[in-house]
Length: 113
Image 1 (tube, rainbow, N blue to C red):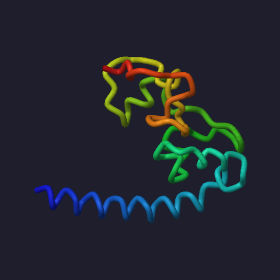
Image 2: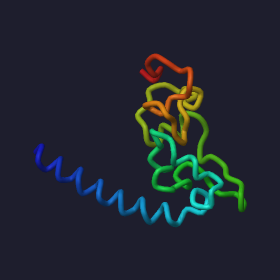
Image 3: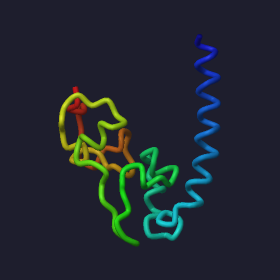
C-alpha cells in the first residue's frame, strides 16, 4: 500500500508540474510583471504557484477580481479548518517567506484547532 501511495504521489506531482508550466505560461497577471513577485516567496500558495488565480478569484473586469467566497469559507473549500476564523489575518493567501504562509510578526499555533 505504501508503494502504491508513493507511486501515486510521484505521478500526481509530475502532472501538477506539467499543469503548472502550462498554467503559468497562460497567466497574464503573473507573467506581465504586475504580480510576478508573488512567485518569489519561499512558500507560495499552490494555486498561485501554478498561475491559477481563478481558483480563488473571479475576474470581474480586465484588471478587477472578486473573491469566490469570504473568509474561512474560501479557505475551507480546500483546507480542513475547524473554526470560522479570518485566515488572512495570520496567513498571506499568496505567499510568504515563512512556513504556512504566516505573515511577519505572527507566532504560535494556528487557531483552527
